[in-house]
Amino acid sequence: MVEILQDFEPFFGYSKTKTPETGALHYLRKLGVIDIGSNSVRMVIFDGAARSPSYFFNEKILCGLGSGLVHSGRLHAEGSLRAISAIERFVNMAHAMEVPQLTLIATAAVRSASDGLLFCDEIRRKTGKEINIIDGIEEARLSAQGVMLGWPGAYGLVCDLGGSSMELAEINEGTVGKCLTSELGPLILKELKSGKKNRKQHIKATMAKLADEMGPQHNRLFLVGGSWRAFAKIDMLRRGYPLHVLHEYRISLSSVKKTIKFIETSELEEIRKKCGITSARINLVPIACEILSRLVSSFKPKDIAISSYGIREGLLYENMPQALRDRDPLIEACYFSEAKDARVPGTGNYLYKFVMPLFSRPSEELKRLIHAACLLHDVSWRANPDYRAEVCFDNATRSNLGGLKHSERIFLGISLMYRYRSKPAGSQFENLVCLLKPRFVQQAEVLGKAMRLGAMLWVNGSKQPAYLDWRPRSKHLTLKLNSIGKSLFGEVAEARYLSLANALKAKDFKIKTE
Figure 1 (cartoon, rainbow, N blue to C red):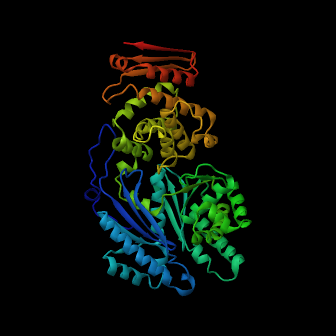
Figure 2: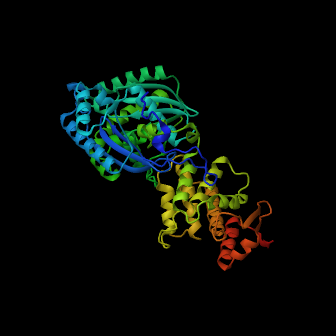
Figure 3: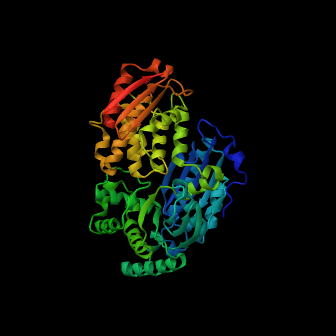
């Protein structure tokens, strides 16, 4: 286990004081990670709401350090020069951005190469920074923690595919279990002699050993790594999938087979251009397909999810107190956005209480989505009024939020769009509505119109001026206004109340004042 930070609190500026209005634990300083992999070198600087990571800076350089490693035993010469140059630049950028803690980690290529330590010495000489060379088991554990950052309480098997290795880790209820590592990396497999047939036999034999050691893993399979993300982009292309967000993208087992066949029978260059995949990455995709095919047949997962979070996010998770790990990443991110961008921070919780009577016996999943929407209802007020609804929709569906399925992103997007627009005609949601069941589309409309009404009745977050009473069986809706609410209720608010009643298909709707 790599000790990244000896003392958590001074580095993060963490306060144990819980803020009642937001429930948030605040991280005031940045965490930087330079990840030196077999195929790429990337620097990420995390900032903001740490439970759901915000990427202050995120850049990668494809260096191919692991190319030719099988035959030479050494890091790729040209790749080493590119990597050293990139790392030197990254360190200088982190210094210029006043990042207080920058951690450098190296994985399979550097730990396997005979000149790996010389490479680290050169980095130390040029930058003054030490590189932590982590072993395969530690790499698997950190990748699994990255997945848990995005999926609280996740369970299943994590597969992190790098250029020169593949790691497996089981996760269950917030803990990492057995971890394994292998040399099933595309860069290494590409160098095997005797062609495709021999490579497939090698993958089959190695995967069988991994399956025996890991034991049955028939739950969800989480895929981490650039080759898997490239495969997901191609799967989206083949399916005509409308939401191009990789994190939490789901792939069925039948879709895996169809997409592998699609790749085998298509021109890679044409796929590359359509999907925006680099030339270096697309050349590894066919080998990644061979690995995935055997991985799926060996472990037989119930479904597959793509995780954009991996080893770098795992390092962030490593340094969180348990109190923060246990929080919902979606709600924490929304609290952070409200505190930073809303006109009246704190109103979201009052609005949540206002709209909840409209939803009879909501599931926990629905309640958290309603809560998230209420917290986000006013964070885009600076946008041009003509495009505010579209900005809200884009923010909800495409922002880097953890703990959200794609259908839940669409739910948030539609509800926030209705918060600023009474009718959806011509909106961007029309080609995405297929990802959401009709009853949830209707619920999102109701939520959005309720928030649109409620937003007119609050000028501060201190008191609740209005209450809703909805009787779903009799279809009776009542808006109750106290003296404050009555003074704020005008013609526009009345029109919004009528729009809400229509969305609920209310047979009778009234306004009562105290």
